[in-house]
Length: 525
Ligand code: CA
View (tube, helix red, strand yellow):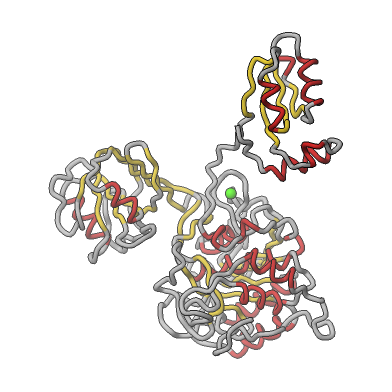
């Protein structure tokens, strides 16, 4: 009969409504229960509840002969033993049966621990491929945008990249899809569409986009983009914007090498590395002395233009498992028993009419699926050979059966089970993407979220708070893979509570600030 609500919460709510009884003052456990009483004894039960220091929470007496009440635990026994009481039972919780998913990155960056109720005082500018404004998880946001000549309407997204980035920043808490770092439609978004379906533009377009962001009140700029060559014009523009109070955040790059990517590698811009669900650096994340901070960027599920994503379902013996469609795999639904196909490096003999269960190895995922097809398999489930989920692709290879990835742990548990399984891949409005592009909006979102609670801070002070409170990963202290580590919203907020900004940023200059956490041998803090 232990109450599912916290004692403090319920206790303080009661204290507001009632004179403080001895029981409440002593902090006794309060129980929320339903009391079913015998016909005609409602009034006497009502006064008994009140004299016991409880209160009626909901009156169900007219139709159900019962009250929902809150009552000190020590008074329960007396109530249960009262001759007019038929029974007492816990008033158990009911909740929305939501199919909304909280992507792993949201709690990993502590976005779920800091309210976005203040975020209406911040504007995040997203320079990308547009924003599908009709998307079910984005349409209710406070969003404006600017068209760039040659790329079309900002509120449409022919590429999908910008809509995915936006969902990580501000996917709405609405029982469908996903949630972003700031899910309650408070933050202001400004969209500048610089990319069309091809996904490239000029540095001059980026500089012009920066100007548009500033003109529209941007505090934070998200740039999930970059290129290998620096531009003096860009560098000056970002340095000047930073000095005027704009915090620019960009992707470190996906080439898996040690080269700088720009704009991320300008001193005035935060460079963001990508880590996976186990907080390990992604193999593609560029490692340089400019990498400043890290965030989730592998298998990040977010919004994509309506109908362009894929949802996958995998169940075995009635239990659902996390799964991800192989990129490029055909849609479809199949149900049959699981056939063990080992590493799937030769035709899976005996898999005819069954779903192949295959371990990840050294050959391509497409070859494993082909080995399944060669054995007559109707679907393929490939499990990881290291901890975590498997996200894979068929590359350019055409395959004819639905194929998915699952985690190592789930795959190993199913080997030899012959379980009856269903694999389904269908069109959806969400998709998992990989990239430092996906890590960047986690940091941009957290920067705006934290900043919304500390508006006296300059851009450099918010930046410093994010860096000194990041969860150190990899080599102790700052390193070229993870920078200062995993961005942490709550820790940064608490740091700024303990070290409040004065709003005196040098004669009204709201930018710049200490840049000592950027690169170099110095340890932040
Ligand atoms: Ca949602």
